[in-house]
Structure formats: structure tokens, C-alpha cells
Length: 154
Image 1 (tube, one colour):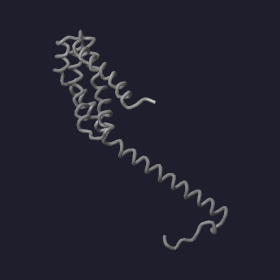
Image 2: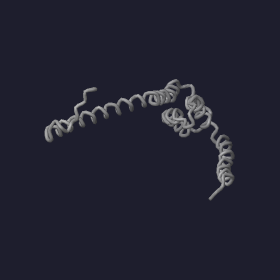
Image 3: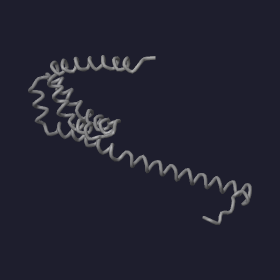
Image 4: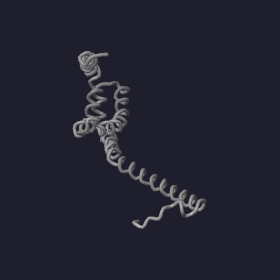
């Protein structure tokens, strides 16, 4: 069985690789990294705002935000991956609308999904209760009224 120190060392080596690779990627693909940093700003905001350790807001907003940023990242890569292509994307208001609008949809999904889930669960519960009452009526017809106790306190 591995001790906690051994487990921390195992996790630490993966972190070292990330800290070595991130600067290299930032140097090689600076324009892409810059586009993603600017385009994914709502995800960073969600990451800092969400106080829960699970960071569900960052996952939800980040997924939608990434979907809005990827077409422009591909456009940058296929357009020569130079500063002029990056400037063309960043000066295009439609690009901002798509990237940040997708993040806004992510915020809406994050905000309204719990309410929708509660309403669907409540509807399902009411349908189950109606089914049970119907089954109870069938049992009363089959076995008689004596199987249902009389309750005066209702």
C-alpha cells in the first residue's frame, strides 16, 4: 500500500511535466494561447467565482465557452497562425459575440438546469402517486373496503 508521501510524489511528477510543457506550448503557439486566454475569460471568471470545490460552474461555462472559441482557434491555425490572423479575429465583433455568447449560454444552463430537474422530478413523483392511487382503487374493488383502514384524522 502506498503511503501519502509516495502518492504526493507521484502527483508531483505530473505537475512538473505540466510546468515544463506549458511554457513551451506558450512559446511555440503564442497566438493560440493568447486567443484562448482572451476568448476563455468567462471560464476563468467562473472558476474564481464558484466557491464549491467541484467547480461545476467552471465546467459548464467552460464547455460552452470552448465550443464558441474552437472555430476561431481553427481559423487562426488554418489562417497562417500569425499575428495578423489573430488581430483579424480579435477585431471581429462577431467572434466576441460567439465566444462570449456561448459562455452566456453556459451560465444559463448552469443556472436553470437544477430548477428544470426539480420540476421534472416533481412531475414524475405526481405521476407515480396517481398510479399508486389507481392501483389502490383496483385493490379495493378486488378485495373490498376492509383492506383500507379508516382514518378519521385526515
